[in-house]
Image (cartoon, rainbow over all chains, first blue to last red; front, side):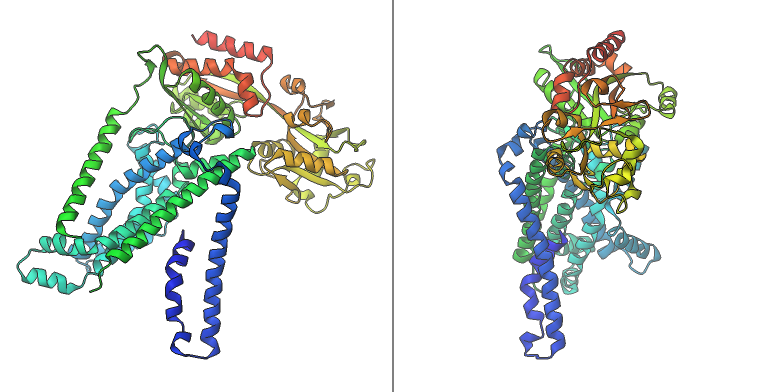
Length: 303
Length: 321
């Protein structure tokens, strides 16, 4: 998804930052500008190739059966219904687990913790580093944790949500801290000067003002979780589920796993189905990223 | 974003959590057993080989028409990974593309797991050449390894390098791509290691492409599932394979009776005896699986059981009660 975000975020702002706009005529900046445009073009061309390829291969299978049918041994009557529902269950659970915890952690680190204290500095360093850990490691962590508390079936909704929560928690903490940091200290000082307590200031002034930033960061983090397969595969992901997941302890499969399974089949029909499911996944991700950009543009405050 | 709307968001989040937890508690299926309407319900958990998974999936797919309340799940941890879970009592059925190993037997014994081995289908690969090819009637495993081994890459390019009596004819190689069980099986049987193969051949996930390739080139050799040869007798010729005990032609019969070695093999499911005896849904699923093995094998592109194999399987299940 990085390519997509880059292309969406980078395109409109780039011309404003070029030397050309300020009337510069030297060769250096111009060459650099061309290199930048070429890099952008490479990213966009790859994305377009992928999308066109998927549309051509999976377009014919993209229809109601994909949403309503269960997996089957025959590609003609197979669909991704349990995978779609499974993805919704896992992502919703992940959101409920992660966002309150991540926001609270960021608030503590930013507003309450003593930033000079060695302990808090270690935590800060850790959070930064955790955001760069490969996703499969979080799958291992979740697997070990579930084994430790004695869960026998590890491929359940809450298990998958746990792995994905660990994965995106650092991302949400970092995004939230950025959003909180963007709130000017005058707001805090004003609130405190009017007699509000530290807690009232945080809860009624700082947090509401940083909600757009938090929402944007959270949605981008969740869209990353939506596309993940590796940590879930480690939990022993199911490749064939013929029922709707119905609770936190229910077995599940998700769209990326279903796609992974279908692409490994010898029959051509399954490859088309995989492409159709990829279109759906790509559409969902575009929608979530679009929502994040919309929220950022619509609600962002300029102080 | 005001304080009020934030509070509202908090409240709705709380309600959502509560709803999730409630459905989690209320929506769980019963541990299994006969439901009120006489049909079975509950869950059947299968894991193991990704080669056998399509068979179990097809069985589960057909079984849904019989018993819609039974939730069959299939995972693909591989044969070894499947046994690890099976012997930890995490699964009811273990899919296996080879018989259980000694250390896995020990693992199950230590955990007190008793199981039954059932041959569920036969898997055969055929080596095919162009119909014009009249010299390669029978190839030994060593010759196949000469052609397909990783060290042949770029060096073995002509039929006369395989055997001096073969004519001076350029080799054209076609075969299954890395994603298929066919690929894993062929590389394991011929080159001694799963995934070890020269890379300068034309791989395809669709065996029909291999059929076209072999049909179009006089020096062609390829490998694919046995069923394709029977469906395309004009496009290619199956080669007899000598695994040390003479030349054997690949047919459903030689695969089923085990003489077509090493490119024919049996595929297994291992059933946990306690699950079979105590969970009605496991019993009815496994019984259904064995009963409808022919349709299942056809749907998953494998070779079905012989009468004898099927009877053996059913007899073994009968002793479990």
